[in-house]
Image (spheres, rainbow over the protein chains, first blue to last red):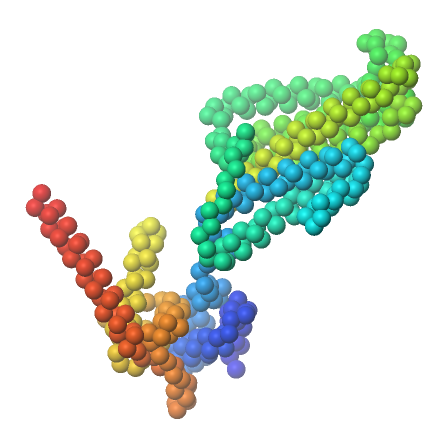
Length: 320
Length: 112
């Protein structure tokens, strides 16, 4: 009958979905709004309803006043959300590393199933694992909150306590100057690497004689690996450039994510026929193992940094 | 009004509004008439706060309600129950005690 009133009540009804007394609540609000519009304007029109509806308040806020005040996760448990997620994800991360290194399926039924996967798949898998862990912990805390019971959850302490969000460095100017110098160094390194690549199609050499250089790697893998390393230099430069203008943790998240992908690409490069110089055959497996461990170690450090950034960002969101 | 003060006022009003409604409902009233009466008493109540409060009171059997469909527009009338009167007495007792404490405190301060 009154389009605006019907639309308003429908919106409230949407937010009250699932409540038994929804129809009665809506009838009462309808009755109130119609009566007020008539009393204040003499008769009910779309225009008079407009002002009465506006005074009654936004539909979502009206509906919220009828809903029980219990939060999804009790405020006291909110800090457990990221602490427990970090713990769970650390286990997940370790198991991923084990699954990648030993190239085997890994099952702890019914809790964890780690399929056999390569490095790239692992890099793609970890963010999903993080979100799953976050969801599982959130679900447990949700059920605890909804039970209404006073449960004392254990509070595990880490060697590096991530709980406290560190305040920004006091001397912002000094920190900016350091970032600027770092960026200039990285820019010079990137430019030099691009120059070498443009001239020799590789950036890896066994001598420093640039008039007659001897490449370290075979032409094809040398080109691929050089391009990946140049991309890493460029990403580092770009990240420092962005940090000159913002201290947002998101810049670190993007930079760390990109680094993980590039490290993954490096790990995927075939090792056979890699070197252009003669290397004793007995030494090759050791070099391969050493390089893999080094890259996995760097990947682990970057991942820890990435998780720290995500946790701090999550905590800041919660604090807001 | 300063938003901080507005927040405090909202918190204080919550308890006061319950006593006020329980006091008003000694006579049967419907929502809109309550809003008007409360305004005539010199106090403002948000309509979207009053109805959920009435629903909570009704859920706890402190007030009772019935729809009157004899008029052109149906109205839901509320009235206090015996349990509601008991609650009102308790709440008024608390309010008086709090008032007393504040009065005495302010008196002491004015003597210092």
